[in-house]
Length: 137
Image 1 (cartoon, rainbow, N blue to C red):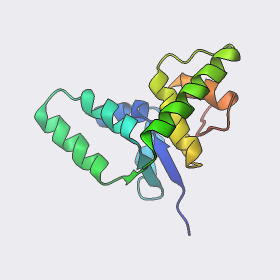
Image 2: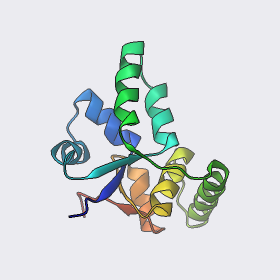
Image 3: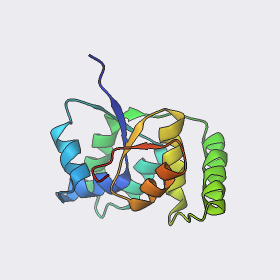
Image 4: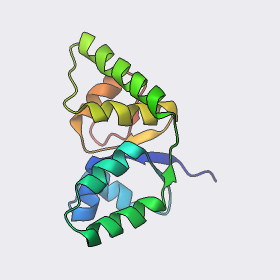
């Protein structure tokens, strides 16, 4: 049986590490052994820049070291993310954090479902091929 691969956004990881229960963080906790979890450089950077101590940094880094790492050409991904951002703007959708477009591009380029707790990804999914885990239809 093939396990589904999910790209897990920073918004879920923050809740996961803080013990905040959301539908996404509960899904992650209850499926840790049933899915493959992927990450990308943007998510790792966001997580590590948010830690407040060396101990927290080591814990987070060791956790992320064990995830499936998405390796793409950084320049190519940046260009695609900028194109996505501009395309969304022409459709009247402004994404609050441009890094979300980069994370979305990693998910779309690898045909992965994105697990998130950030409403901007819902907007991106409505106007692109981004697949998201949605708990509210």
